[in-house]
Every structure is written in structure tokens, then in C-alpha cells.
Image (cartoon, rainbow, N blue to C red; front, side, top):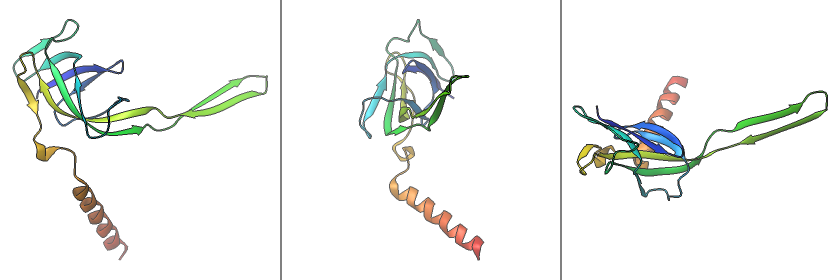
Length: 141
């Protein structure tokens, strides 16, 4: 199975075609394509290319599915014996990205997903919800 290691937002991610990632927020609108040019390693079934620090000419393409907020992290600060407390929360902004293609040095496609495997359409999602609702109704009877 082919994969690549990319760097974005100061973090490294191991990705393969059709993976869905949550990365630090990118200023790209939902539905647009994104290219990751900082590719640290590319591996197909036979060869492995390790960058120094990046693999020149390698590229990973993705599709922005959504810009979301992560779950809330509670922060509690207390100074003992001072009657001083502070509690607040933080929600990190994230971008949800589906990897569509991995390209190696010469622009050769290592792995790619077909258009029909792209994220589920609204109709397919609604079909899944109705099936679940029907199962719940049958269980109640």
C-alpha cells in the first residue's frame, strides 16, 4: 500500500489516498483543492524515496471537505491559598481534508482515488440516516 508523509501546520501526517485528515486550519474554502508540497517521504509498493528534508517534485493533493472546530479543551488555572481561580475553554479551528492523489518526483501518480469513492454525497448520507431510523423503529416494536 502506497503512502506519503507530509508536513502541514508544524505537524507530520502519514497519508494515503482516500484518507480523511483533520489538520490546522487552512485558509481555503470548502470544496476547493489543496496541494501539500512539503512531502518528506514517498513510498509505493516497490520504492521508497526519503527527502532531505523534502522530496523535490513530490506532491500530495487533497480536497477540503469542511472547516470545523475541534472539541472544547477546558483550561483551569488556580493559585493555591490565594482564592484565585480561572476557568476557560478553547476550541481549535481545523480543516477536514480528504487526500485524492499522491504524486512522486516526475509527476508520476503513485496512488489516487476514483471520483465515485470521493466523500459521500448528501443523498447517500440521508439514505444511511433513514435506514438507521427504520431499524430503531423496528426495535421499539
